Length: 187
Image (tube, rainbow, N blue to C red; front, side, top):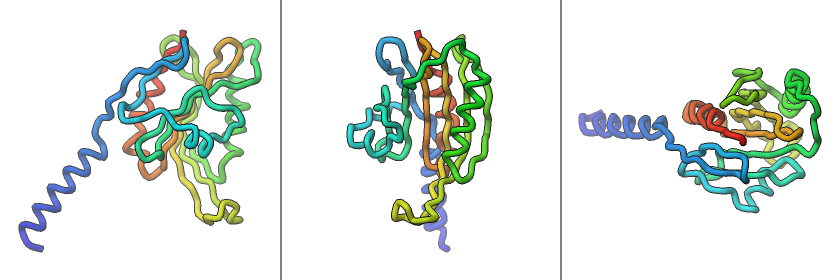
């Protein structure tokens, strides 16, 4: 390899490394009258087609934001069922069982109850794999994701905040996902 090629490779490596792991600028947005949170400034509100394509719930989310190539998503939703009392330990065990059953493989990075801005949240941060072994979706491939979900009780309903990206870009997004979740505010 000649000197010019080595130099060009070095410059490209530094540029891609810096861009790939650069700090993501966050902007505060409002979701309805009572919820606000920070999201990356490059994200946009998901189109109705994107929501239909990605939303696994029968209920339309309160808000959904995605990156420019529609691979990284932030979703805010509210359950239809009501919860009286507020025993977060019980709710956490029910939701953990549901989350575990959704995937072929799951590895928890963290799970528990955390306080964010004076409010208690159930937190699950994990990586997962769903395999299309039976070629159900016509792909026959596995899908690996990084997910950070937090739940909280609000007016006897559960609010869900979900950040998801492909696992291959987890290192690029994990700190930002944690910042986003720490920025959630509910009146």
